[in-house]
Length: 409
Ligand code: HAM
Image 1: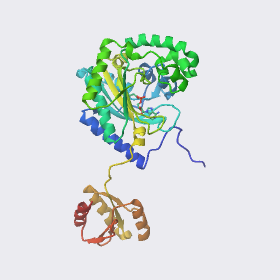
Image 2: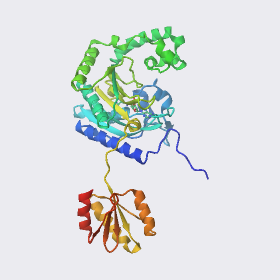
Image 3: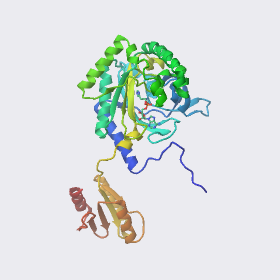
Image 4: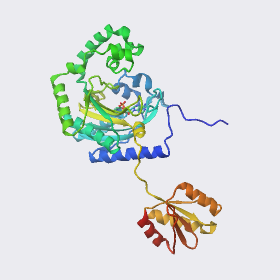
């Protein structure tokens, strides 16, 4: 019978990669904790209209990339393509705004987008993200970005920060009509997708990677010229605060992001070390979204990082706890060996019992394969072997053995 294979764009994460995954998430948790964020564990499935109303009907995510199906109760549901919409829904549904509106949440987990898989882009991928609700001040934007930088620094990842301001929905309306006029004049030079985008999502044309589109839009009007005074001031403040916090940035007036909910600040951390999919973390402000999804008017902002992309950039893992392998020299000592391992673990030592029955030689082979730093042979006595030096030592009881191991590990 032929073996069943995993679905295209989905991955098994195991071995060293699983360690990297955990290391990244643990590091992020530590940093989020330092900034006093609380964890929220969000559902994988949501009503499809949640994403239509937040991410936006015209976006690639909603138009082409969502896993949507009808469940047995006839509801139209979607596997979450991102976490912000769910976090906002949860904030409203659980009345977190009742506590004065201020809330800082983080989440981690799988997201699903039916994109064309390539290096760094999968159909099931994982994000760690954080959202801040109820603060209007650009101090929050600066602190959030500093936190993302802390995370990248802790993981020893160098990335370039690009920032932009999209202004309010009002500012953008005027800009978009100007942009549409401009794009219509250049229509014949644009790729087929961008020709359609003129009507559906003109901002995305500025983001297009096709050379012809880049060339044709070289002199396109820039959003920053259409910002209201208050948005301009906010943007200036953000830059001042970022400098204060020692965060280097590049201003990219074309940075628009692929989700519709953003207002004012948007940002991306990118690297050129992992191919075309170089954005490792991204986010921004979404001051209208809480209200748009039925909650009270609440300014908010957040970011998410792609864990798989971070994994491609992490090469060194912290040193792991050393392993002690416990080997009963024959069946008569099986129960004693189980007890020895149990006691080692009770003392927080990392122990693996050789559970396979067989000759001592075959057990030794397995012990070697497991890569233990020490092996304990269990017979009437306990014989400790240091695998690096080959030295052996005899112990009468497990307590003495534990003392010695604690000294050496
Ligand atoms: P996003 O830019 O769509 O933003 O995704 C954030 C990050 O998730 C990307 O920068 C990338 O690292 C990773 N990512 C996205 N798609 C894939 C994929 N197909 N395969 C692997 N990694 C991927 C958001 O999702 C917003 N919710 C961020 C946010 C939070 N904005 C405000 N709050």
